[in-house]
Length: 165
Image (cartoon, rainbow, N blue to C red; front, side, top):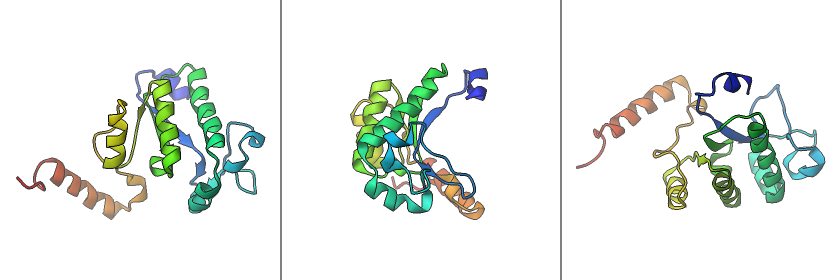
């Protein structure tokens, strides 16, 4: 947030975070743990990425809304101006109700919503919100070899070489 304060010309999004993806570094909610108990595991931290299915089964939408709002408000309280919302480690929120909650928050805060695939793109655009125009590539999840091949395929398709006339 300090970097963004020093460089207000950088576009950035609030990556709504309720999942830990690092093995040796854990974090929890900005909201007090007592207010969002369905979002934390038995150690008091957010669930690790390996436990996303368990998290999605028991996470309460009301707890998610409290935590998402707290994260957005923390950015705004720092006098920063985000351009969009996104989810950290949860493609399109991971559940339909989480997706809809986030669409509502994007509308309320006047932000775009970064989504992962064509159906979600169309849903967001039909609701009048700006979003990405193409499927999102999560290059972090790809090996170096997979990245090269995938980028080559994207270039092939986007330059019309892979499209039938």
